[in-house]
Length: 316
Image (cartoon, rainbow, N blue to C red; front, top):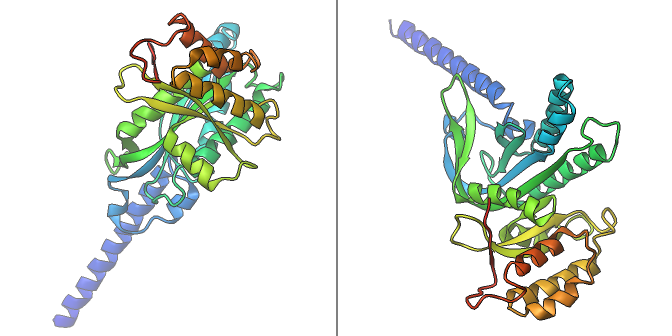
């Protein structure tokens, strides 16, 4: 009798284990749309591995630009327009997943990716920055080719790094992952600032410091752009551009970056009359230069009496 009972217990345990494995396999299959193969490979049978947790998180927002203009010119070929957007979203997704990121969401022609869950970060925002530059290179190849379906599109990326809660949300039948916290809002704001500052990739100060310490300038560079109060935010952001190495983007030389930084220091310290002649030595097509000139012009090229070094922006 005891042996029969023991056999029954073993069978029950075996069936339970099989069910657990099947559930995990189903979960992994569902999550394969959001997680890279390397991340999925590292998932264990511990069901808690997918539960939301507070972690150091790097977020990447990426948005395709030029959709409205393309929609007008391609109104008679909506299938081709949809295919162009699909290709653009695919480039974003591949950029995130190829660097072992997690895709949290697609919203229209934009994507949100993050790093730090379910596998904790070892290199901070470095993988997010590498993903952003991968996306930059893919888009640049496509938009410069008149035969490409991406011709006429542009993009903007915002990257921020900080504490956030990330994890699986929804039911076991409809798995989805999400990330929540101020750093997510900051990443979104940085993506929006790429339009105003005229650069493809904006990053926060924490990310910029990681890049300086962990990636040689022969691979990746950063450029300080401005100190701003985005609309609705009480804390000023020091915004940086993420750049490829100089041999990839020779028009953005180290000399130009240093010259701009000299002008920016003068602006932040309220020495606007000194900043203006320095800015005139920078090419007019430089987006950040035009941003500084426009913001100073709003104050008649004289710093306000309550100047604190940061421009207050009027739109998101």
